[in-house]
Length: 557
Image (cartoon, rainbow, N blue to C red; front, side, top):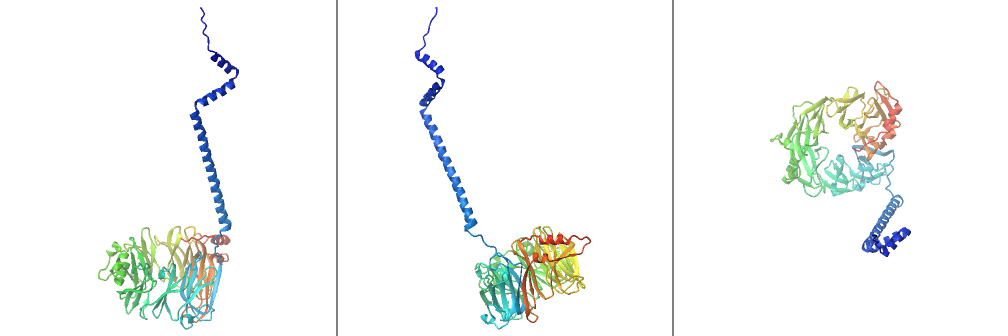
């Protein structure tokens, strides 16, 4: 028996409709689905709306930042002027008539244009067309003038009469002198007045009597010490020898007032002194006299002169103090029985602390800066000038010395680590007694400059020679002079560029007045016209050597 089950009409209609109109059915399903999920539909609509707004904000921020950057670039490129770097002349020369030169020359950025300027002292009358005269300060003519010349073109930045009598002492580049935000100069007259002068303007910051006896012998340089009078400015300590007694005196760096009383240090006249910094960063003053060196703690010198409270502002080194001669009050560095007269003492940086180079009339020794033991020695009989420090090898300190060997002069460069001679050159002795100069180069070595006379020269003239370790068998003859050279110095007039040397030539204070000349010459100017001197077996093309010197770059460090 067959059973027939009837289907609902709605189902038949639905299936038929799905088969005949499939697209229409899909639309219907979608509509039914959306109607069943109205809550979810609302969420789906809101989310795209928030993302859209966030995208618009990001786009606006991007274009706003881009627009701001373009405005800044436009402002710095066209509206805000770039600082103009001063144009420096390669060479300039200034002459003073009826004048004599004083052995003082310094370089300092006086007018803050990032170019070094030249400070010097000279004696002249009122006929040099200066904008000041001796009478402005109540001096008789001729008198001494301290002047600053622009490093760019040699123009006078300022000039000031400082004394109508002999000048005992002058030193510049003393920071915060007179509590001004610039360096200053100190000038001490023979009559016993000390002047502090602002290097930037030439104005007198303060003027005070020193209280020194007329026959006093003043040691150079001035020693800058911590602020013992608590006025916010470093103070100044001077050493003088008078009436067979070595004394120390302290002056306020702010106003020139005396601080405390003079202190008696010893009864022997030293040849000079220098300050040494120990491994513990303590400062000591080393006086060299005859064949011995005696060290005094800056802490002790300050406390004995200005009071016990000054001791707290300075340090002492326990290792040094352990070797102190209690009864004498000093630390013996080199004993009295040491042979040879001590001429110079220099700081030689070591690996952990400074060592001490002692240059004697017979031999030079490098002493350990803590134990005072001799590390090496080299024969330096008849040394002619103060040694100069530079780099023969990359980042390895060397020492340049000039020695007299009969009628000749030998120039040697010594390794500071071992004392081995790295380079030497012999030439005629000549008459110039100027210290060699060193300029550091970009390859972590140095250019060495020194004066001499060529062995085959028929004219007695002083020649300036340039040497660089990259060409050990060649010298470059830069310039020659027949007039008297009072002072010579080399420096970078602009940071890491513009290497120059400065000459002060003419009559000195022991001669009759004449034409005094201050000149600056750029090294590249002389290199292009220089002459290559060969003293080795192998010669290289001289033009290549000259080009190498010309392309050389210099470093401020």
